Image (cartoon, one colour):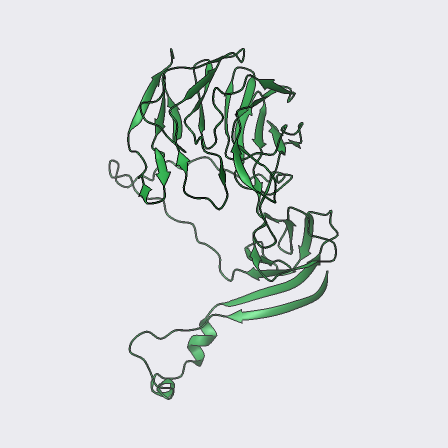
Length: 351
């Protein structure tokens, strides 16, 4: 840590009403007392320097409070986000992924909140005047180790005692094309973080579902190359068992991306999606599909009845003996944009 900069920020007092001339401050009276009463924000700023491997940085601010606001600016002076852990009233810990490149410096600003929040009186139940509503049990936040790679477009599925987060895209907007990854992060029931075997290929735009002792990740798209980047739909289905061993199941009946996954009874369903193979800058072709692929507890694939409507990017949810698939695009063409469909289709458990 170097070049620490203590600082103080005072709230500005704003006078509402019609615009005032500069000398109106005299007519408004002496504001010294009002400004003195405005809360003072005590703060601290420092820099952290990366070495290409460390992802945790402890910042000692000595502000005497665990009620603080934190902002982090990267080497390009852009505001960035990262998990912040309050260690005590004098220090915090930043978790920054991916690791800061060696020699690059980030600026960290810590501001003390100058007031304490008062307990809020619970609202009264109109059915029982004068009696407070039952409050939920106290819940303390638990710090969980961050993902091995910060990314978006990943898919989460649970299997056995594990929660899995697979695939996704690393945003490199400021430096070049985004990077699709094959990474899989796992958290057990004690929230211990591990890294199972990676997917067989980097992918995004795919779907996940669990059935029996297996978590399935299906389809999506795999970038061809950076010279001629295209989103090529995939058909393969990768499987992780309760021991986090990776297997391969029979592929989907049709390669596609932006489908959805759901579990009903003893089946994992993969529904809808987009059939097109398009370049990233080619926005004139999105074509939904009504295809449904089902996998049972033995990973045997079957093809139930198709949806009543072709759907690109639908949503899914299971309730009772039904799984519902809602909305999504039927098609998308330049000059002929179709609005998301509002209909839904019910699939009974027997299917």
